[in-house]
Length: 285
Image 1 (tube, helix red, strand yellow):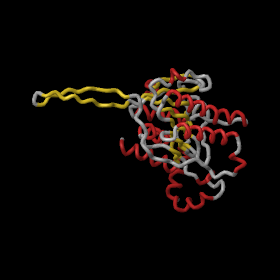
Image 2 (cartoon, one colour):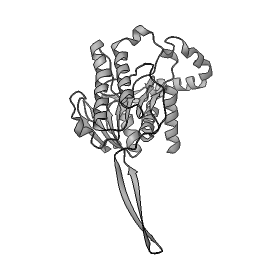
Image 3 (cartoon, rainbow, N blue to C red):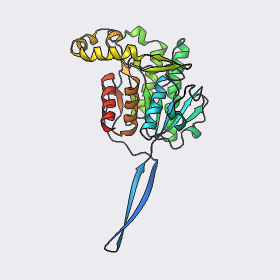
Image 4 (cartoon, helix red, strand yellow):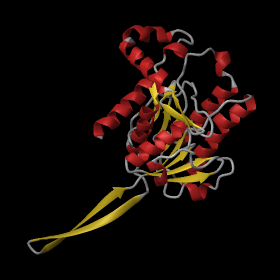
């Protein structure tokens, strides 16, 4: 889903909150003069232009976010270790593709004019690799964005599967937990953590399309139809490994766009809240 795989953290951090924050610094002023009864009237309007930097923008989730942002009139810069994706689509030419590693990135060049940063960074490996990829890489990104003055940061992690403590103490989850904590510490009123479960859609790998939607879409419909029966069972330890509803990658992308556009949208968001945010965006289209 990025230059790495992306998954969540399951820390007991604060739930989603809603409170206004200051407007983005990227404002342009236009002046309109009109005349009524020979008296000139000056009208000054503030127009906010969005520019989003997507970390891991050429991956499964990252590319869906880039595409959704372009469709919503948002300027997009993608940063990943392999640059532009190797598939063809019309929207690709509208994205600025930067090849780079967040550990060695020239942030002053990448973040110019950014109104939000979205990170899809994550992956698996040995303990140290997982702490570095899931934790340190995202912590560095959050700190860089905050120091540069970017007003919003969106971090895609993973759903809390009610896993036992010995699993949650692995490098994968501790890395994710540290990234979430850093984000909500640096961006208490504008940081967004999205925690999806299994993400499905058409995934492009080395020029081939992997139809994850053939699995995810039927499961999504089954979970929706049986929600009243399934919900009580989801409190059982590790039950969500089987019972957590999947998330369409396009819904996740729309939830990210909603986070970028809505100044009152911040905190930690569950699978259900991700779907609600996506539905909200669809209603405005």
